Length: 375
Length: 82
Image 1: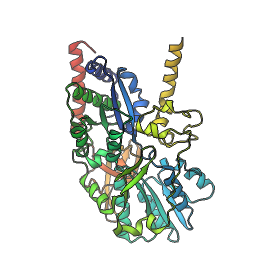
Image 2: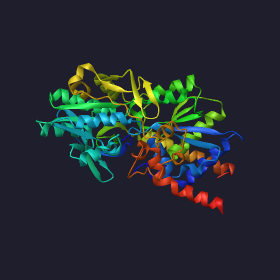
Image 3: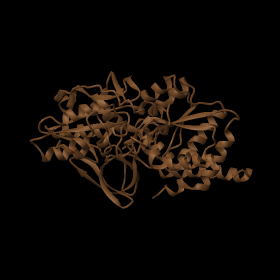
């Protein structure tokens, strides 16, 4: 694949790692947060932590769309799916997320009509083919997937499709970052900025982090060298006492984002006063709902949504993992009661979740290190 | 989901008034909506999220990033730390 092999060259990785080590001040510990779950995945898959000096800790952030969905919303979705004549459509990632009464997969096994779709546009097809049913799309994700939902609503409206609606759970990344910056639990030195969210929102929304909090931000690509280079750029800023927003992923991310996509989101959706995030609690103006003009496509207007609040299982520490306070393996149920096959918490579900990424790629090398240190 | 997949536009067409394209993801082909990056031409690289092209992969910037990485490696060999 183009531009992939070049960004995985191990010699360049070692050269970058040496430069990064050279920028560490003796005795200082650095905590850098990668906001995006895609980055977490790359870091574990390629063992990037092994390249870094011990002084640098990578903290995994909240940027995993299914991880931040609270259990109550899953239960709400299940209630919608159980309404008469409803076909629920959902991304595959969402299917295994546990609610208090099992996941979408469990509900499907019990006979509820829940179908997996690749794109929200596929839901329109299903709606056209089933005029006597009501199709509800479980809309989730950050600003990367919100434009696709927006366009789907616009297309449904243009077509006058009477039997399609969305259950909107779209969230926005900036308030979550702000919540983490304001959290007393965690002291961070800088941010590896999300790559694909930034293709839509651009780099400007991160400026407050550099300006008001004095933390450097580098928007990063998803290949191993992209991430190492971004860490190098962050360390360079820290060594100079600088804090600005840089764009390492300029081959994909335009500085101003995608204005057409932003317009479509703005046309169909508006900010909710507040929304509950798993682990982070209620964050004001952190999620989107369907605008009143498009109320006929809003499942929350068409159906009565129970609006349940469910506390996470006691054993589950996804909240601490999402805030970067705990590493995945520090959770009590990690890899024992909670695995990707039978997840208790959301972080174990999606490949973008820190626990799932660590379970798939990281745990063996850690066990080896532990055993080696014992002998 | 947030993991965008890079692919190359093979063909452009219209469906229900929206610009669409067939995109080749290293052998797997899918029809995706090009409404958010209408300037995409056949042969261009793009990143696709859940059936929507969201950005054009800029070849010049990709080369620039690679060059910068190379220069980091070169600097190291000059300083004798690599």
